[in-house]
Image 1 (tube, rainbow, N blue to C red):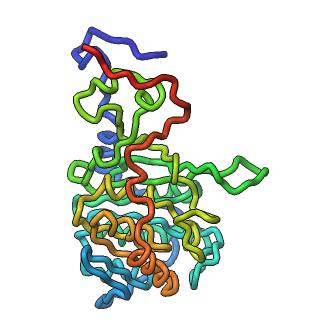
Image 2: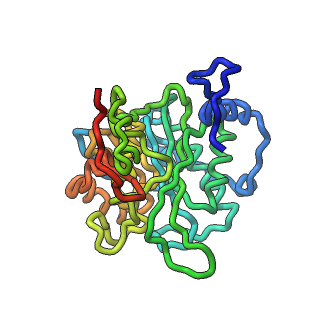
Image 3: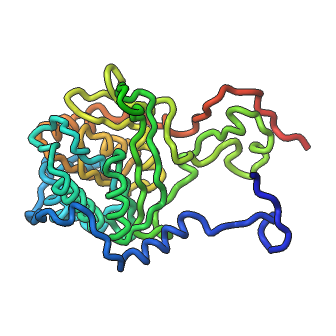
Length: 339
């Protein structure tokens, strides 16, 4: 039932004010450092990174943009920017037997988990003390990644969901229509966080025409997006979509990266993607004046991504901001407050 006012304790407005999810996750991050948490992938043989002097395979200035070709575990271990990356976004292989260029996407489960833990550890080492890490991952590996990052001492800020309406049709189970967007930080108090840069219309404004939302002192009619992401331009990139890069798999929409980059980095910051793919991360970062590094295992894919980053550019700049994700049509016009 609805929460009732309790006047027997001193709380703002008489309502209970719990410490909140971030405070709980912060405590968990501290406590789990000493936990003996073991996962299936821990038993697999480790990869020994090949540490070398790196030279980017593709580079451009204004802002500094670099693409390295190779195993991200090796590149991360040799990265000259190690320890100073502001934001990392990773959309790794899912181990779903996708025919990637020169990549085995059908590893034994323990080997795949070990690979996952190793590139995650490389990302943690690459992050600045204030850095944030986002991972795009489906159901079958989300839990392992969350547990691993927690046992490495990172704090979960949000477990978001990217929801799309065009899932692959099947009748053997419910149709998959989401991927998890896991948001972790090394230090939740020091992280980059720009809520005003990603505001969308609230349902009070978009549906109900509620005058109270226009009576706020700032951001009238607007709110920070909820943790389930959907709406125009948020669908899977396929077919004749304007953003579609042929010969690439599992392409993420630009609005997704735009929201992450605007919210969790500042102009001039360094953004890194250890699985560059079609180049979305660096394309959006460059459009919003962020420096960026992309790592791609396939030289063929890296060349294609570089063409997009430097020649095509971002096609939907600004489309993730200011709109509405309302599920219902407008019920009445927004009425400004009266004196």
